[in-house]
Amino acid sequence: MNGRSLLLNVAVRYLMPLLLIFSVFLLLRGHNEVGGGFVGGLVAAAAFMLYAIAHSPAEVHDLLPVSPRTLFTLGLFMALLSGLLPVFGNQPFQTGLWLPEPLPVLGKVGTPFLFDTGVYLLVIGVILHILLTLAED
Image 1 (cartoon, rainbow, N blue to C red):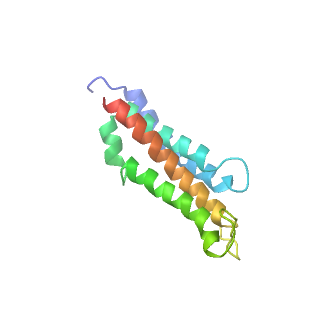
Image 2: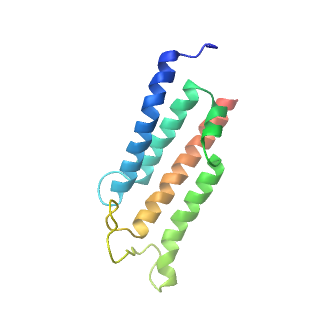
Image 3: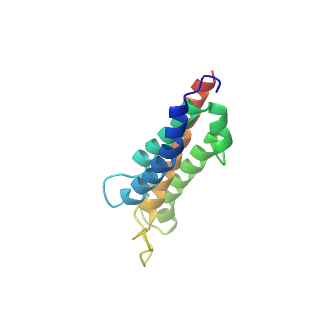
């Protein structure tokens, strides 16, 4: 078993999906209530780091569909885009724009949700990039 804790491996197997679902819940309710992209991103990054502790940082890289650097680049682009969309419609930077009809599960969706999603990806990417780099050293 190469010195790894069996109890930690089993716990992570059950905790990681729950933490990721909870992080998405925080993201989805954040543009209307307490929560949001930052807190949801921290919970998601904590789930991946828990996996890294139980297994290895290299296995987290294998688990992720894209690199942490790509995640934070995409998140930064989404957050910037959410602020620039109103400018293209001759409105001030970061003016809230919403779709006319609410979407099922999500409710009213607009640029604040796009911003929160960008922050979510940015936080996950930055935290994972920093902590995985430290863990690999």
